[in-house]
Image 1 (cartoon, rainbow, N blue to C red):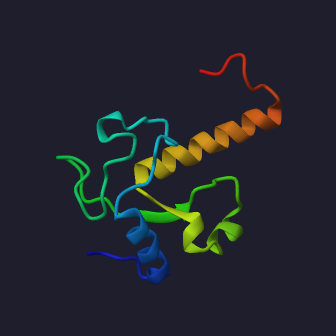
Image 2 (cartoon, rainbow, N blue to C red):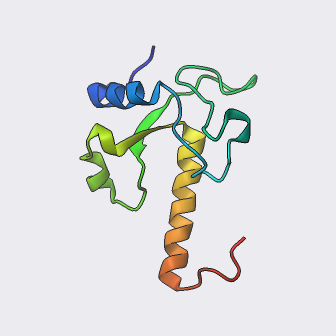
Length: 110
């Protein structure tokens, strides 16, 4: 099984708690209906017929924190993310933060 070179012990603790499966439950915008509400991607398993293996990352569940703060979080504050869900959830959190700052939340949300 592949592991990152840096912070391997922290990464391993997060992955063991997640069962080596992405912990996204729809934060990425995909409801993951076919897998009972949780992303089906597992570490080192192929994502699809035309893609290579998925390498899960240990990243914060709360995207509002800065990178320095996020780097110092303990394993309990981290989640296992596949690259697709992590990127989409991070973009969704950034959009929500911009909407909240601009004060235009609500009426025209799609």
